[in-house]
Image (tube, rainbow, N blue to C red; front, side, top):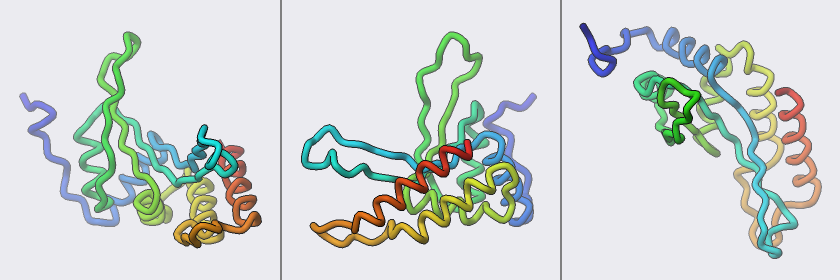
Length: 157
C-alpha cells in the first residue's frame, strides 16, 4: 500500500500539465483583487489594491505539484482546522507580480475563471500597478480606475 507522500505525479507534457493546473484553478481557485485599507490617518485616504490567486486544497502534494507545473513558488499556509473539517485544509497564495504571472500562464486553459483572469490582466495593464511615481502618488483618475476594476471583479463572483 502506498502512502500519499510516496505517490509521484505522472510525467505530463508541459501543455497537459498547464491544462491540469488551470483545471485545479478553475475548481479550487480564487482570482481576485484584494483591497487593503489603513487605519493610519496618513494612509487612510487611499486603499492599496493587490492581485491575488489563492487555491485551497486538502492535499498538500497537489499544491506542491501545482507550484512545479507553473514554475513559481507561492505561500502555502495551513489554516486552523475546525470540527466540521475531516482533513487539514491548505491554501496556496500568489500575490502581486507572481499572481499576475501565474494567471497569464493559465489564462489560455481557463474556462470558469477566464472572465476573472481577463479582468485582472486588463487591470494590470491599465492601472499602472508597476509604476511608483514617488511622494505625489498616482493621479486620481488611476485610483478611480483601480476601484472600478476592483468592483467589476467582485461583480463577476
